[in-house]
Length: 106
Image (cartoon, rainbow, N blue to C red):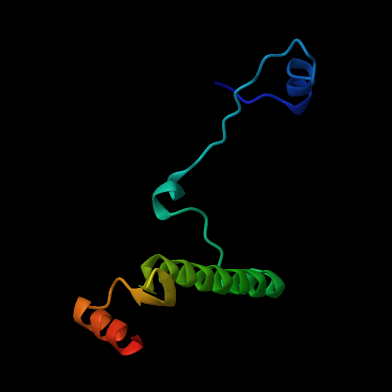
């Protein structure tokens, strides 16, 4: 394996229909075990930091909503073959509390 110039790359690969493919390798040093490259906040542009913080907050909020929704159990209460009420229970709440909530709604 050896490094090639940009000119050699263009000549070899060149976008020609006869070219099949070329494997490209990127050297990855000892930072692999450290979780990647790290830049301190003081060296990053402020607008990028703000953008990343907003995106992270948005992702956390979305994750919390998804987790809450995954814990929901919709319960439909019927009387005489017709739905009378719908309540939503939480899977993490003990069964006794859920039964009391159902009784309170009746």
